[in-house]
Length: 187
Image (tube, rainbow, N blue to C red; front, side):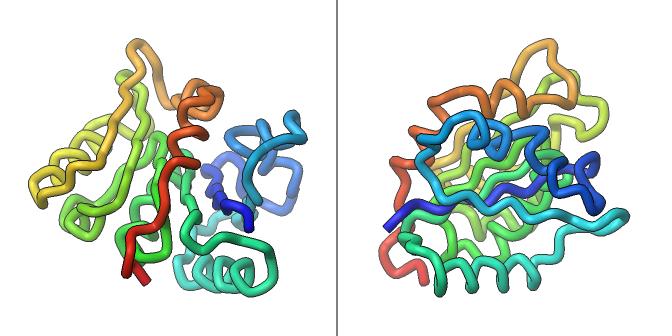
């Protein structure tokens, strides 16, 4: 059984060119490393659309039924628009994932208590003027306020919106993800 990583890209990769999914993040790294230690699913979002959690749920259900996936080692990550969706989907279905890694995304602090038992490692540039880093700070504070103690937040100094290059280039992220397992009874 293999760990599964679901990667949700940002707005700039939307459309009908599947090659754009490999421009950033885990697909870029998996394409260059034949020993990438995950089954990787990177759906393509059509132009002018946003991530639909119900559709993503169906993709995950299909993967769990048809691929040799360890259901206790499903990881969700995304950047920018995909980072927003990582927060949303993770909060909507926390029992589905072993860990979340939103990058340059903002979540809804009112949903943060759903993530209090979820290992989360968020990333943001301190000079991001597209998605302000306060979105990541607010989620980290809200998760802590609910009693969550497994959150990490990495803020890159002097970096704008592109916090995904350093985040996804860091082997520590992948090792951290691989060390996480879905919580007992988290179905």
